[in-house]
Length: 337
Image 1 (cartoon, rainbow, N blue to C red):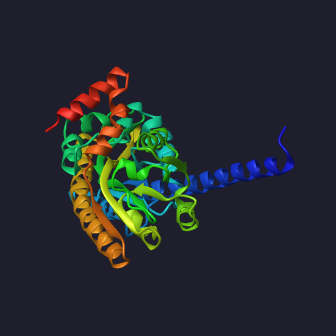
Image 2 (image 1 turned 120 degrees about the vertical axis):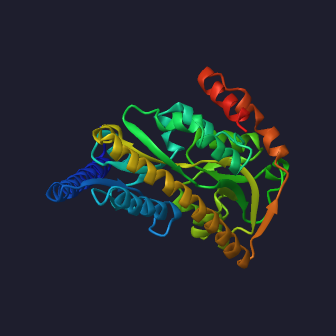
């Protein structure tokens, strides 16, 4: 039996979810009614990013391009900053049809499609160019079409994940021994840290600044813009450019909603999405450069390292996979030129 405190807490969560669902249902109804009144197809899109983020700006360019291609007969209504819930919540709403579209990192989508774990396995991709060769090719298209409830429109760049540390620079796996490294709540991420000789410490991203400042962890891993925007560059003196993972974002639409569009409308939306991806990649590259310069001004040292020892240490994570489907995907990724 639950204690009164726990019972009240759970009831509070359920009430919050119910209120949020009711608010969204009302908002969704208003948007759909406006669309009916103007004879315009309106697609709702929710995500948790700030309006200055390169991915949001990419979506804005898609919004503008779709209006242009369709002559104003199709419109995307964007709800940023978690207005409609967290990223997983938006994804769930797209699955059941409450929301038309959402953006998600492919990492948490492993729970839906196990094949997507290839993006979180370290050193699956040689470099940034290799990643996009795969995403723009047959494998990338297969992933976009994999879900029975959602259809993937395109990918957005989220850069490379790298290590950063407070005092001791991470120059090789040997230099990580004895360190506590913050990771996401991911089995793959924790296995990677163990293979590199350090201790994985799962901590919520919002609590990481304090954990770094108090010495709870010695370092963490993420992409460069997140390192700078979260102000971790105020505490961490070293950023290692080891590029152990490239984990892109995916833009998805409810499959029933997608199939309700005419072939021409699908073409307009797909074209606008793909063009927005190309535009967003350019924005991301500029944001990475800006974030590096801002961090260097704060005294952060950037370290170019030989990736070979990191690749060797994590080789078992790639070689010991037994699932034949995933092994075949890995083979195809490694053979991609």
